[in-house]
Figure 1 (cartoon, one colour):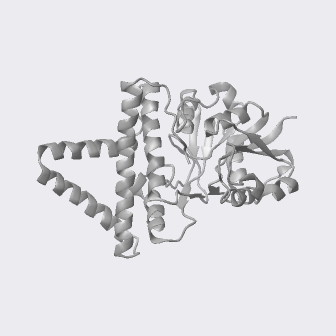
Figure 2 (figure 1 turned 120 degrees about the horizontal axis):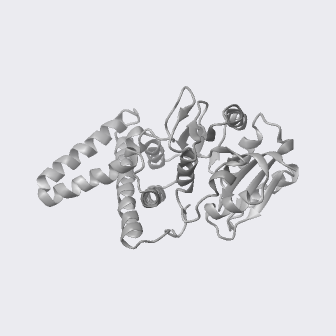
Figure 3 (figure 1 turned 180 degrees about the vertical axis):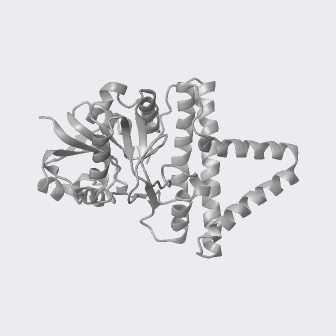
Length: 333
């Protein structure tokens, strides 16, 4: 039987988040009689699935698929190879979804046959309360931290974008453009959206209440994530021989400029870096949360930019110097 909708949720050690994620999905104004929710578990060892055993009993349309490869791209492809649905939505366990999330995305796909992938705005939040984590949350959601991207971009009408997070597709789009590229341990959604657009379909973002996405709880983990995504952007450049949007290149070019200044004149480098740091600090002051918050915000934004630039260099080193096809990160969570 062809179902109306399959919702895919890849997970690995998501005990803290999965229940809230599922309950937000189940709270959607949607008829789940012709829907399946597939939790793709990368062999979690923190009791992830045991925390939702009652939901599995209450809702037989929630299924579990084991992913021995652990990485999301393998699990997503395994699930996509087994389903037969008119529509597919990919969700992340680290997020809470508005109660009109499912119907809003599906209605756009039904009414616009030229749209290949559709998503909603994303707002970065933290489930922790200390000042440093609040500063990380603000940095990850700020224009100076990540630019006006699909994370923070708010639109009033259907708007074409380069990629979206946690999007929705017609089920047959994967027959037309293929599954996710398993070489992309990170950034597989970005690469897949390139193929969608090259095939003549649109990738769009629609207005509405944002998804609430829980950012990493520490600067170290957040920086590692940014590093990995930046390396994946270089992988995109190698595969398609064109640069991604200018936003992705700014940290690399800025820190290359700073390095050049350091080699040319330390005083000039110090002055430019000071101006950069003060600008970020002042941006943090605009949050009106105090001087200490602004200091932590400044540290977080600089860490984001440095990690992105370093990841871009690492990706260039791996993909162009050593000509590797994929980077097998130790983990992506």
